Each structure stands twice: as structure tokens, then as C-alpha cells.
Image (cartoon, rainbow, N blue to C red):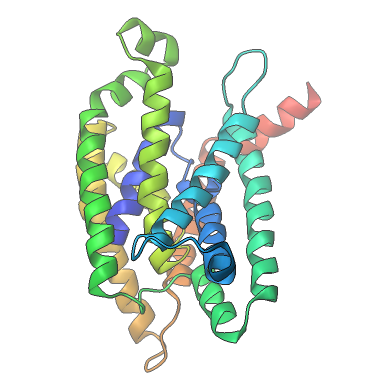
Length: 281
């Protein structure tokens, strides 16, 4: 439930920041970067000698997630306007995702059998490795980041009207971007470090809540934390019962639900048409 809450809240933050319902933490490289950071620690941790107790793995994942997210955010910005279009964001996200996932694949090739198996399960997502230490760490990060997110919900509501309007209303846009990206990295990277890449939760949950109760981020943040936890718990039940006694990786279940929703949103927003129009121009 904590992992579902963290991923859903991260999705709300990124969609509010970029003012588009098709943005999802996994699409802009955060999950793949976090997986790369965690994989790098497991394969080369003994060589690097980077140890901070139980927090070592989350910190390594956060560093990887932060690096990938910042790369996507900076490289997708238009040099003239300084803004990031949705098309540029998606394309750059695909490129950075491919880059970091290739890094994960390379580390899997270098790793020994136990390490390679762990990396493979991360890429698919699984809750089978949960323990009370991971519950504590994810719980602290999720609760703290959700509370901080609520503090900035009104500023995100102002941003939904446009950057110029938000600045006119007194929003420090650069500071807000830094805060939101930092919160997203913490929420997604810590969950990914322990449970692997679980995609599309941050896309599906906020979209369902918008259909139910509107686009007020105060409602979306709290609602996503609750619905995200319930949705991922239900997906976990499906993954455990569908092929019992074997356990299906939960990332496969969430992808089967999330991909149709994502395709529907793309077609609804005419992303393909806009991309073709920009290419002709």
C-alpha cells in the first residue's frame, strides 16, 4: 500500500508540474534511473565501498533517479523559451530510459547469478522481498513527501492555469520545480530500490481520480495516496493468485492495466497528430 501511494502521488506531482495527464514518473526516466543506481550498488558496491547501513540502497537509487530525471528535464527544454513541450519530454524520456536500461542490462551481464537474478526481478517489479525495514523506510519517505506535497498543492493549482499566471499569483516557479522534482525522485526511487520498476500506477490513479472529483491537487494528492495503495494491493493479489503457487511479477499486472489507459490518453490528446504536425513544420 505504501508503494502504491508513493507512485501515485509521484504521478500527480509530475502531471501537475508539466500540466499534462499523460506524464508518468516511469516515462521520464525516474524508475529506470533508480533501477540503474540500485543495480550499480549491488554489482559494484563492494568495490566503491559506499555503505550507510539500511539507507545505502535507497540513497543509491535516489541518486540514479535524480540523475535521469534531471537529464530528461534539462535536455527536453527549448533553448529559446526555456520550456519543455510534452512531445520533447516523451521523446527525451524514451531516450534516457533506453540509456539507463541498457546500463542495467550491462550490469546484469557483469553480475553473478544471485545479483543478476535480483536485477531481473527489479525490472519486472515484485513485492515478495518486503520486510519490516523496507516498510519503515518507504513509510517514512511516503508520509513525509505526501505531507510536503500537500503544502505545495495550491501552488500547483495555480500552475495549472499557466506559468505566466502562476508567476503573477506569486509562485516561485523555479523553486516549485526543484521541490516537485525532488519529491518525485524520493517517492519513486525509494520504492523502486526495494520493489523494482512498477510502471503506470502514477498514470492510471490520477486519471481515475480526475474523472471522479476534478483536478484540484489537494484532492488528487490525498486521493492518489489512498487509491494507489488499494490498486497496488489488488494487483498484488492478482499476481499471487493468477498463477498460484507461482507469483507473477506485479509490474506485468500493472502494465497490462496501464498500457490501454496510456494509449487512450495519447489518442485523446492527439499526441501523434501534434508530433506529425511539428515534423512537417
